[in-house]
Structure formats: structure tokens, C-alpha cells
Length: 176
Ligand SMILES: [Zn+2]
Image 1: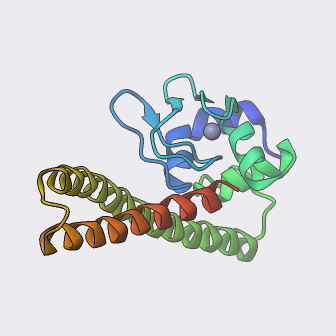
Image 2: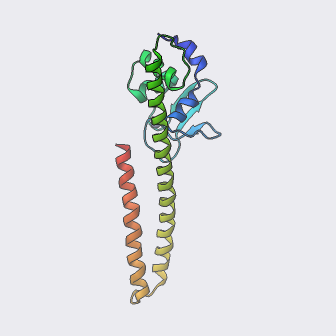
């Protein structure tokens, strides 16, 4: 059994948020690690050791965060944090078990980083496509509807719209 106060004093909430793939900016904001979103609405107060998401309404201390993310009760969540962040406050955990949960945490961290990279790339692509859409729409308005150029622009517009829709659909699935 880990003492909650001792754990909270030793563990940094921003470390756990990062483990979950969150990137905290200078204002203490990150994209929520509990729900999928494009813009950061999760506030992390490292000093006080608390978080609050203005998007999904979740909030609390580091133990609460691990509870929500892992679906554990407070005692198990504390044990999870202890091994995931390598604090080793719980001396009763056999080294093998400790190693296993460290390994799981590392894998999770790796996956979160990959997922973040994928999403960043997708966001950049989305922004590019939206710019392209505007560009092509403007071009289309200037072109002669009887010309080959116009027909080509319309075709390109369709392609761009298709890709934008694809990303939007993909994002909706992420949020489910
Ligand atoms: Zn949230």
C-alpha cells in the first residue's frame, strides 16, 4: 500500500501527462490525454499537481488522472503511477512485476509518441488542404467555365474535398 500523500509529493503530474502523449506548452495547456481533440483544452498545473480539461470536464490530481486513464481504483492507480514513473515507493512489489509494468509504460509511451506524430502530420496536411481548397475555389471563380483549365480545377477541387473528408471521418472515429 502506497501512502497517497507521499506519492503525490514524489510524482510529477506533468511526467504522467507526457507518458500519456500530452505535450504541455508554456501556458500549461495540452491536448487532453483522456479525449481526442485538435486544440489543447487540458490545463496541467504542475506546481499544484492537478489537471482540468475544459473539453471533457475531467479533473483532479495525478491519482485521479491515472484512475480515469487506466480504469483503476485509487489504490491500484497509485501503484500504477509508482511503477510507471519509476518511483519505487511500494517496496512490496516484486522486482519482476515492477520491471513488467515499467516495460508496459515504456511501450505505452512509445505508442503515444507515434500517435502524436501521426496526428501532427495529419493536422499539417489538413491545414495545407484547406489552403489548397481556398486557392482552387478562387481560381475556379476566375476561370472560364467552358475552358479545359476550369474542368481541371473542378477535378482538383473534388480530389482535395475528398481528402479533407477522409481526414474528418478519421478524426470522428478517433473521438468515438
Ligand atoms: Zn478532455
